[in-house]
Amino acid sequence: MKVLVKIPAPLRVWVSNNKEVEIEFEGQTLKDALLKLVEIYPNLKDRLFDENNNMKKFLAVFINDVSARELGGENAKINENDVISILPAIAGG
Amino acid sequence: MNFTDEQIMRYARHIILSEIGAKGQEKLLNSKVLIIGAGGLGSALIYYLAAAGVGKIGIVENDVVDISNLQRQIIHDTNHLGVHKGESAKEKVNSLNPDVEVVLYKTFIDNKNALDIIKEYDVIADGSDNFQTRFLINDACYLLNKPLVHGAVLRFEGQLSVFVPSENNPCYRCIYEEAPPPGFAPTCKEAGVLGSVVGTIGTLQATEVIKLLTGVGEPLIGKLLVYDALTATFNKFKVAKNPNCPLCGKNKTIKDLNTVDYTYSCSIQ
Image (cartoon, rainbow over all chains, first blue to last red; front, side, top):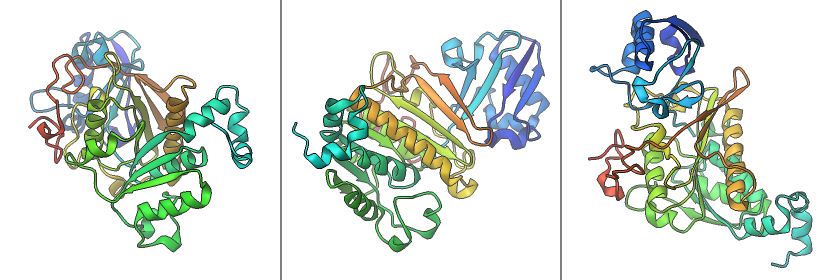
């Protein structure tokens, strides 16, 4: 399955400065897609997942502009050509 | 309320808007808004809300004006270097609009004073610069049932949302469960920020505050607006309440501000 992952500015340094990355992955869930992303870009893994492969709690992830949590969290079902957006928390004021 | 002739002239561009009118302007003049921080976001928030005639503006701030602030914190100026930011902002507001009363809280907001300060106000706007304060304000506003207008910036990006406590509306913790550990999320001091981006987000926050106070339009509830200045793009994401949110979910574990460790991850002690 092919999806587009939008990479926020703070994480681009770990994905060759790409704003978005198209990935093809086996599986059906958000976690499958993001595990494939960090397989391609291993330096990103620590930024997205903890040591137990759970997604970090200070990241918000959206599938086609809807919160992944509303769609099932890590197990949210992904469809062909979905757009996944990762949004880290920022605090500047 | 009887407007003075000067007020009718001052607020004419508001009053002529059918959605706001004299009634909306009267609401603004009778409103109380608390701004956390008189920094970059706070500068835009304070100045536009003062210009709009918000009757009482509370400012929580405990820092002095530094020359490195002036690239974005436009409520202060070079003559105010070393002056308390609250005093500097108050001086500007007083010279802009005599209708506005400014109340200064010369302190850092913490879990001991937050509820007492926030309870006096109708709407709270977050212009703070760190996660600990952001989680604290979110929690305090939820516990006091106060609307919170959230804004945050870094580099060329900004985020905006409105949190109004209710059975269905999400809070900040529903979007971000915990604060990132040090090193994972750089500050503006470490990573930089474009001054005008702070103004953009602060101004959008001021607009959301005015919408909440007057009842005009649809506040940004349940949505996260993300601005990317480099591509001149706004994206609006739908955010839902987290049923497991420790603050506003089904099984609440945060019932007062003393149960949370605000010094690190902002999670339960």
